[in-house]
Length: 545
Image (cartoon, rainbow, N blue to C red; front, side, top):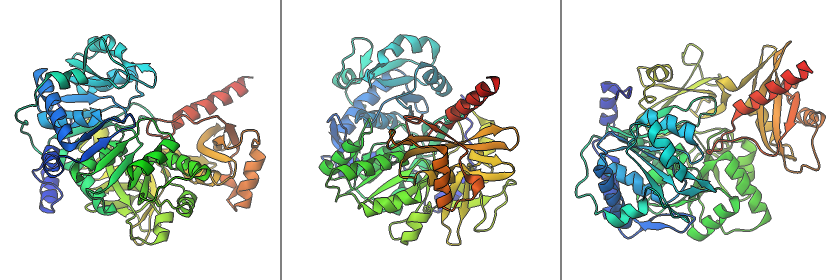
């Protein structure tokens, strides 16, 4: 099958000459960690499943033998729809051993979405839970197979529930002997395809080579001084770029220890930090908010925690300051599934850079800010953020048109994010190009308005979208989750707050909607298309009425 990989020989030569890329695959790095730390715990999850490096290697070898038996060859896809469970690492390493392309899938996707992704990848094997969050995945055994012609087998991963149908990972581990010899392949071959969250449309398969992923996590470790001594808390989904790269893969490369949390609960996160002596964590902005709120109500010993990395959405500046007052160093990390990660402050940067920017390029990464014609703009001018480096993806799976629009011939990936770069090379993300509200010719950044709303004493969460207006084109509508629902909140009170904050009047929200919770993807990004559709429907109803 033609995957549509876009990677020039010139870029390959440049990254090899600079030492970012080489001949070592992820399997080579894995084997070195096994040799270096055989008896060290590599991973532990909330259910108590834990494996040393040697135990993981043996289990992965048995799983690889099974994959080879069912016909998986180098370059074939193996899909894995698992939450943050230790068994994910077994399957990941098994794919390395046979040269398969790993395709992590978020556990909340159901049959229609799953069928789309499996057919896009032409997956040979699918690993899924038998039961997770009260959802019975065994129904997929009979419904998926006829609709995915490439699929040879579905393997169930059991935790608390046993399956009576199909084959389970536990059966494989009890039946097979470890693969005698790893398959041979190149570091420039695909290692993984991660699908974007799909908050605005169909998800896209982001193709990453072994060299892409290795370069990404080497730069990440270098920026934050991560070593084999670190214990990494990962409450983010491991099918998301954050969990896959900075939880699983960084652990493998460093010989560190990863602590998985399959369902995020802030008190559990804090208990894990305290018990496992976690030195760093990584998650979305919403997770950090919840952890901070929990810390106000109860004391936890989190003295081992050096920092918590925060990404997935613009990090509100006041949150960073508040976290520091509570003894948590929150560092904003900026990136995307296509370019993971490529900007962050370093540990020795001035405090104001931590608080007021989204960091500077990681080692080996270039960043530029461009106008609508993709011409670079001077420092201090807002434009679209673009990045280039050895971490940048090599195209969207079987989507050459989409690839060419996002990734130019010189290797620059155009993110669609609006950004300003200062004179020192630090960037500040101001929103999405498509997330700008144009009110009577004035551009309003949704993320800026959201950041102001979150400083209101009774607002817990905020999402701002444009609502249609005949005269002005669009007006600003804010969807809010309140801290105290009984206290309530009116649009007049919100506008008074903006006035006290000395905000320009055209940026004031002109309508608010109070919801119990905002719709989010599993990686905690807000599904704004649902909010836009909701307000559009409400306005249509009011016009009809």
